[in-house]
Image (cartoon, rainbow, N blue to C red):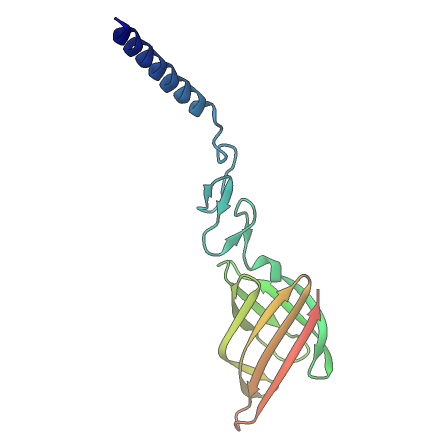
Length: 163
């Protein structure tokens, strides 16, 4: 008889424990319930994981938007204004330097850095080959680049400008 009572009590305790844990786990709030990640982002543990090209707490910002603006600074000894525009694709920026050349330089954004592949650039009446990289820290844009003229002469410069 003692064994039957112990068995019944053990079964009752196990049943109460099981239902109690089930009820408690259903009361735990999902940290992603109130978070809407945009542009295909996914929520994990209350934080959005953004797809390539987007950032921000809800993936609401294009990665290249932070570069947009006019940067005034020193470029190889002269003061220049670099005009930076984000493009629609989220990863590309275009840079123009109105007083130096016609056209634009394009670069690919990754976080706070930009890589400029080798590209042709018309300055006055001569074509140059341009390549380089850039980084953004707050409102300061630093661009390290190399320009090669049609005769093969090479010049390396560093632009540091503030928005």
